[in-house]
Image 1 (cartoon, rainbow, N blue to C red):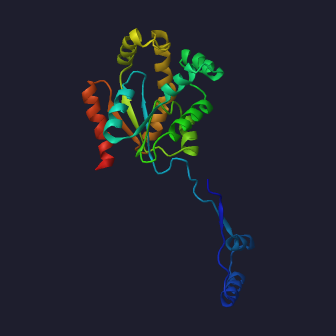
Image 2: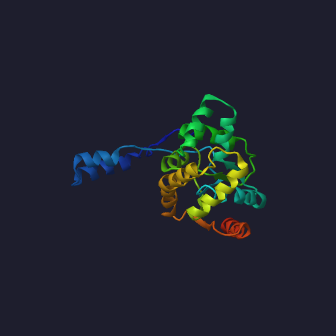
Image 3: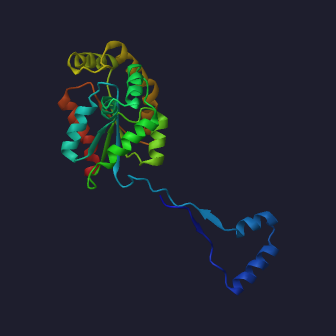
Amino acid sequence: MSTPEQETAPTSNCFSHIFNLFHFKSSSKPEEEVKKTNSSEVVEAPKVLPFDGKKIVFVLGGPGSGKGTQCDRIVEKFNFYHISVGDLLRNAVEEGSEIGEEIVAIMKEGKMVPMYVTKKLLLAAMEKADDNVPGFLIDGFPRQMDQAEEFERDIGHCTFVLFFDCPHDVLTKRLLKRGETSGRADDNEETIKKRINTFVEASMPVVEHYAKDNRVRKINGDASIEDVTESTLKAFEVDES
């Protein structure tokens, strides 16, 4: 991270100095304003973030909206580095650590995992990427505004949000079907409802925030996989043309 630099106006030559003195004495400006005009200004250098220079795409949508499937298609076509935040958390749980047990309890309630946990796992995953990948697909993140703000402050700037919009009843049906074989603790009807409600209350404000400066590319998730893929790839081809 670069440190702030001071930029001081160059020293005036003798003639300029006399001219300035005369100018200030003749001016009707208050003495305090004159001092302010003459004073040096400290200019902070722009903060360089660890992943500046890489495209960073946040992939959001309700649970069961097909984010993971479409991320696989994007990786295949554009060679982005895919990180599923949900998988990072589940892998941490499988390790059986104390933090893993904390994550399990939180996930069963359909609540958000604290950012300090997510951030640590996310940074470690991003650092594993090859230097020549064009960018990152961060799937299932940010789940709330403070996560978005902290990520853009400390890690990198979001290029755009890929948002899969899908009706809640469709999401529920998909997850219940998946739950028949997934073995996941959160694929049951009670937890699914909590997860969808959490997404609406916490994550939709993130989508709305990025939409204000045209950084959201919305995909209809209630369509066939192939139709969704076609729309998804088009959202990326805009940057490639």
